[in-house]
Image (tube, rainbow, N blue to C red):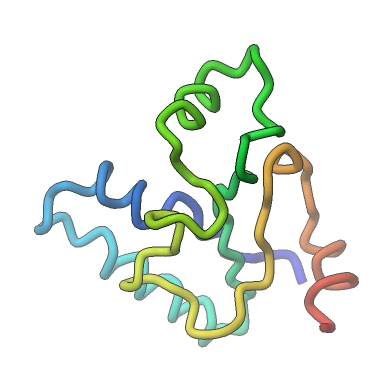
Length: 118
């Protein structure tokens, strides 16, 4: 396999800030892309931001993450961290990236060998 659909930045808190135009059609278009990928047997991988309480993974030099931590956003399980229900997975979420590992690259081949068979 050489393709996968990565669904990113669709946690409720992000969508509520970024997609303020209810008529944008963004979420319905994304839902169609997700459903189309599944129909074509293309893996759909959801990527979320999830920080641990106390933010131990946030370095002092990362201004963006420090602002997120100061605002108390994206703590595992907190309101707003869930994937927006309009595009939420209809099946088990296969990949959840926690900081600081977010920058790690997982190839589709690695994903198939380790996560997909489970």
